[in-house]
Length: 347
Image (cartoon, rainbow, N blue to C red; front, side, top):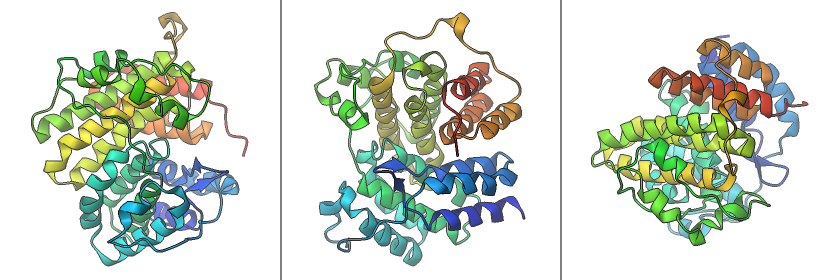
């Protein structure tokens, strides 16, 4: 079976499950399998799914249909997850997927923190797959991703960049939330009152046109991936999303009108900064305690695939692209650190 068919079959299997399990944990299956297939590991996909899917729940039931007239009232209501999934299943079945994305991207983008940023991340993986082929399971996967994002829609306080700092310096200047004793919703809830939050977002240099926005977003993604290496001990799982969220937005840009690219940069930067504020440690690890790149890019993804944790796989997917863009070996070393710190799945 070829790689494209493997991915389509994997999507069909996963669409018999819900976007969340065990309360509100995100179903990472669609994101991980898309990354594995794209990096030449299609042979691992169904075995990985056989283990992973034992953890997943059935799709949620709906309460009341979402319509084109009352969607705003249902936005951000996790109790309406089943309704949103049905709504977007119909949208992508009846309209071209690019048209659906163009309509809903600006509506959903302010709620970029949805599901600990997994709404936008799953959407980015779905769009990436669709840009390769448009087989039937792929628009359906986009519908699942958008429905999940809409149900968990969650904004973060946003300030447009207006400073002079590059992404690495701006990210280093993001303040930590004071109370890191609970989950991400509690931590993100502190941002609006966090001294220095708005100035930290504003410190990033602005993009004045779509082309600049795309380049700056690539730099933000690279900065977050490189920031992970010395800071992963703050939360080796959650800090992954500081890099994978902007990467998801970056990969979506080719399917969006250029007029949406600057706003997309702003939201992606805020999401990356928010995860950093919520989970970065008080101090980075000393340089002599950090791993070096364990091999070539292909060997690093092999390491992640063997490890098997979905977050390590997703981080490897992002870090390999950062390495290809920048040549920085620290991007590959970040994957080795994730593999060392994240417990291998016992499934």
